[in-house]
Image (cartoon, rainbow, N blue to C red; front, top):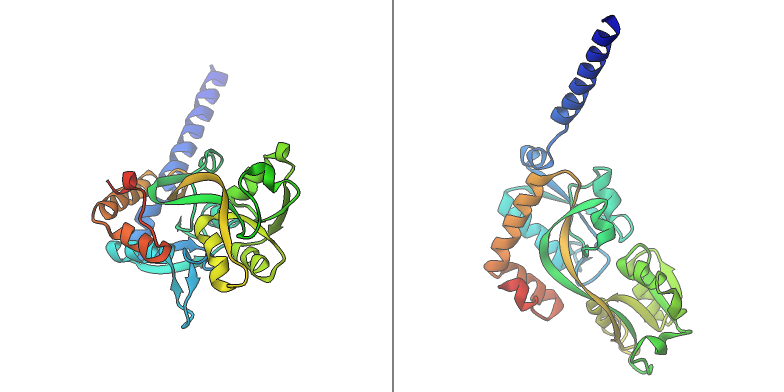
Length: 264
């Protein structure tokens, strides 16, 4: 009888601990609204999505998207500088509240963070010097392809073992683009937008998209278990896709409109 009573007490105590932990767990949206400030992880070294202007102020499509969100929600905005490899750890370790940084939605990432609905799109390609005769994957065999470490392009190309690709990894998109501009790399795996930026920075080395890897939805990343934040983000994205503001931002920096299906 005593043993049974002790077992019941242990079970009750365990239940209380679980309930207490759940109840005491802060809600991200409530915390952000209470603080009147949102910390957004954004890479400021991947033009035209994130960069700094001549006055060293953040600009770009992701920057203006983050600024619009903070304005609509009546919050102070703090940018948390990040790279492709550190975006997800930033929200997992609470260094940032959300991610707005060309974060493509993939099954692997969905295992460790939650995503909002898509606010933009990204065409992932292998781009090379315009003068190179590259039309499909077999033409890339033996050629060194520069890639930013930890990106979807890095993961995708690494898994293409049968294609015998030579991959050169860089810590971020800025150093990868520098390698292309300076002649250290004749091919890069990144977004079509970034590929086109190489020639802008060095007209003597015009790059163009050669092989499409895939098309990705870009979404806001949030640590797992924050349904209220995801719901509010989804409502905000839906509103600003419908009113055209997110399309205006994208077109301003990327030179093309968002996919029609996304805008409808």
